[in-house]
Length: 223
Image 1: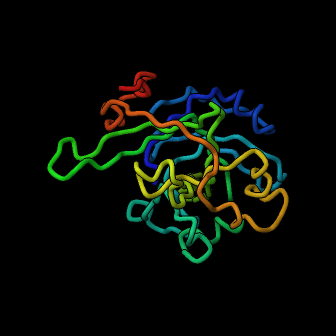
Image 2: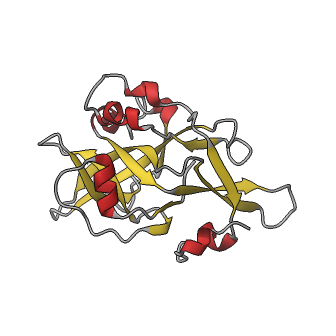
C-alpha cells in the first residue's frame, strides 16, 4: 500500500528527467503528499502521443462515474487484478502513467497493546535516484463541464527488504520500463507488475507525518 509520499523534485527537473513536451506546471513540491491533493504525473497526451507532465488529483475517478460524491476514489490499485477489475481495467489498457517521488511512507504495526499502534517509516532508493511508481489515470467530466484528471498508484507484494514494514509496496519502475508502461513500445505491461529488485533504504521518522497538514523537510528526519 502507498498512502503518503514525498515529491520534492522541481517541475523543470521532472520534465527534463522524463523528456516531456508542452508547458511545465507550477509545482512547489511536498514532503507529505496525501489523497485528494494534486501531484506531478507523466502520461502520454491522448492526441499527440507525446509525454506530458501535469498535476493530477490523487484518487482515481473513473470516466463513467455519475455521482462524484458517492463514488469510491481509490488511491491504490492491486497489480494482480488490474485487468479484471472494472474500476481499473480500462485505464490499465489505455491510460497508464508514471508517478515520480523522492520517498514514500509506510506504517509498521507495533506489538498489540503498545502505543502508538503504528510507527511511520520513510523509504527511498538506496542509489538516491527518483522513485517512479506505476500509475493509472482517468479523465472525468461533470454535468457542468468541469474536468477532473486523477490517478492511482499500482501496488504489488512487498519485496523481502520492505516486508517487515508492510505486506504491500508500490510497483517501482526502472528507466528502461517507462516506454513499456506508458505504451510507447511493447504490448505486455503486466510483465512489470512485480516487486522491485532495487535496493532501498528505510528509516524511522516522527509521527508528525501522520497529520496531512504537516508539510516540511523535517518529516524525513530520522529518529
